Length: 354
Image 1 (cartoon, rainbow, N blue to C red):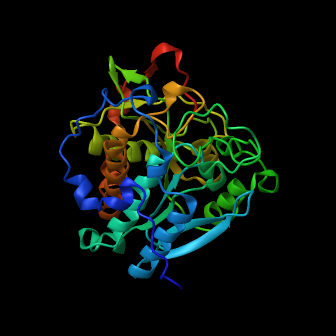
Image 2: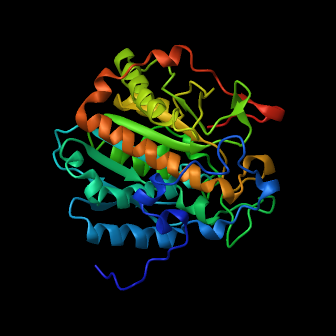
């Protein structure tokens, strides 16, 4: 493996180690105060490109003994789709973190990359003995690079590229999960054939971004969560999914900068959290972070002054769930909070769309 090529440090995730991020005090632009695109331009140049992401992953793979890097397939445009694997014992419970089904939702990817670096430090010593972790940090690389076969003229970000929700074929990858695998887009087919069907996955968090104007109780949310809601999902799978949500809620709600609502999402089997739960009995949680990296609707995109706490929120989520699965505390997680968790509402007619 040739590691002479210097990794491009173009994002917040590559500039801040996990410890530095978690030590940050409550951000000035915390929940409710993070600017939209109109208050601060979205600069895509500070985000990882596909190429710098690959360099970053290969560098961490070389440094970390417990990490393995796998190519699970290719995008429409032929880009390799990478998955970071930490499998110490196949019999351990396994969690998958999936980011960027939608290419314009990249801050969760930045957090996932910092978390990969974190897993190679002494701070997680012993944790990976009892849990297997799979991380796909960029499923829709073509959309993330704006390398698509349709116009992005109406997108709002500044920088060296635009990012789009759809893949190169103008298909929403998070509406493909009820199809026969042979009929899926290449990115989703790779996920199903080479991850869902290959690994014995117990839990999955599907990380997305929503718009900037979702609120509960008059306060803008930093994110919203939801378990699988398709009627075909087994009761025990839903219950484990709710426990996964309990861990995330407990880790974030009392931070002073996190404010979590219940997402109002569809019940269709074509949606990732539902499809994976129905087809593979994976306990799933949708996490919709606030603000997107780019969008044709200006109010959906969030200026980069809010990036820090959203990246921090992703890292906190991943770390808390891995630890809870490793030490078994997820089994006794209290799910009663779901009964009173307020459903988010959207200001100014902004629509939810996971």
